[in-house]
Image (tube, rainbow, N blue to C red; front, side):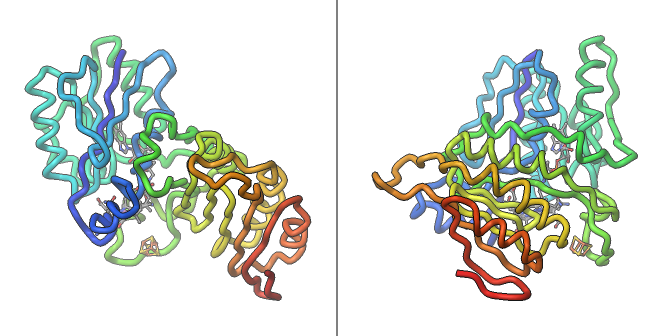
Length: 300
Ligand code: B12
Ligand code: SF4
């Protein structure tokens, strides 16, 4: 089966940085990670095409069997427009993401299938059922998925050179309960994290694709030469540094457009890290340049 996954255009907000993107020669700040993740969950026998309306035109003439849409509440209007257009063309339209999870009733009757909450298990279930010809109009993931089951996002399907930065998702869920916040409604109050090996595999994949910048929502950041670790629990920071630094200390991938002879070295920036022995280990990595401060000392 062929599946087209579409991320709708973001309405302008502070976070879209629309006015400064042209000076960076980029179309969008970050890709939304939802669809690369959904593509990663898709069994390999299916063909997946990914389209982000923020950086490219949508192909309405697609020969895909299924069109999957994602989006936040801000995307509601565009999700409904796209769903109507694709359905008019006879496509099976399925929708997931924060809007579908929080307001599924707004989509009933306007799309074919709604995915409520995370889709690590329900998306493959739907694809299996779709092939038999009998599927449900709503899939609801009640028990929160184990993040160890979340796949490597298909960064390779993105037009990576059109974004300023890649994002990496490290955790879902939050132990607090701020009354205005819907993160805990969608992702629960128990933080669930990916394994260090998963995060490192994502960083390596971004490295392999030659993408110069990446940012993590867990405030753990990596670019081709820079890793920023701050605000993470002590044990996680130590784990990242110990297990990650050794592997990252390979020569960095030369970036397109980098001046010839640019030194290939890793730059680590550390904030609020109180794991001196891990920092010592990091400083000893060949080619590592470490900047920043820990609770106990400053490093340059
Ligand atoms: C990183 C992040 C950002 C970053 C990067 C955004 C980006 N474009 O990637 C920044 C800081 C820029 C940002 C900005 C904004 N964000 Co934001 N952001 C997040 C955050 C922390 C993680 C998003 C992420 O990477 N998810 C990873 C993917 C894998 O998870 P997922 O989307 O849930 O996808 C899963 C399921 O939902 C499902 N799924 C999703 N789509 C689909 C589609 C199909 C077909 C299927 C089957 C399944 C499916 O499957 C996936 C795997 O389980 C979330 C909160 C959170 N913890 O998730 C908020 C969040 C998504 N952001 C939110 C908002 C409101 C915004 C802003 C609009 C804020 C503003 N007023 O400007 C802007 C919009 C910017 C933009 N234009 O994109 C809200 C959305 C609220 C809502 N209910 O719709 C959230 C939930 C946080 C919140 N509660 O405020 N954001
Ligand atoms: S994610 Fe939501 S509940 Fe958790 S601290 Fe932030 S605003 Fe509060």
